[in-house]
Length: 197
Ligand code: DAT
Ligand code: MG
Image: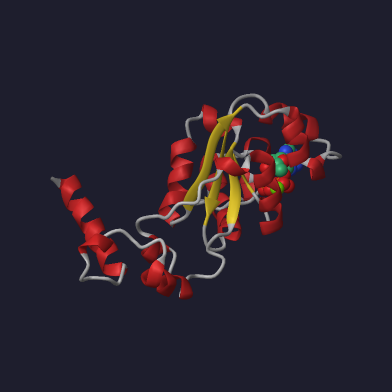
């Protein structure tokens, strides 16, 4: 009953925001056509920005994947790619190429290959910047409470999650971790509420 009521509310919202109240065939948002064009013209800029978020082996082992994903869903971002993988040395050396000369690099590789990683691509307005804020400082000892690292970790060598640090970096990392066909373009049923003003 509750589920039916929720579904009903969602359909009413979709119907209302589709801007075509007289036509019962338009209960789902139009992918194209007049209503679609009208929505696109007022869309939030850069709404299709994407970032790579990865739950590192310690986060997976500690069963934190669900809680971390929930934060991004709650914030309103859209999941467009998701997979669990055992990361190869080759992928990691490309991913962390800027850190190759750091003293902690060997232990970083060891840690990152110690178990499965859950890699995700999230999409939305300023998702790179916002997710860095949500993830928190690299060193959990300096991360604010309320951030992923501030809530779930205490040492830089086990900081639970990766987040791309710039739109250019995100693009590079997404291409490294995901094949094109693994990323889905899909419309959220609440697109008109979360993605457009
Ligand atoms: P971030 O993950 O916040 O983008 P980064 O790119 O500088 O930080 O470093 C990548 C990862 O390397 C980081 O998440 C954890 C590890 N790392 C960084 N500095 C470290 C240090 N001083 N000791 C051990 N590991 C470190
Ligand atoms: Mg980084």
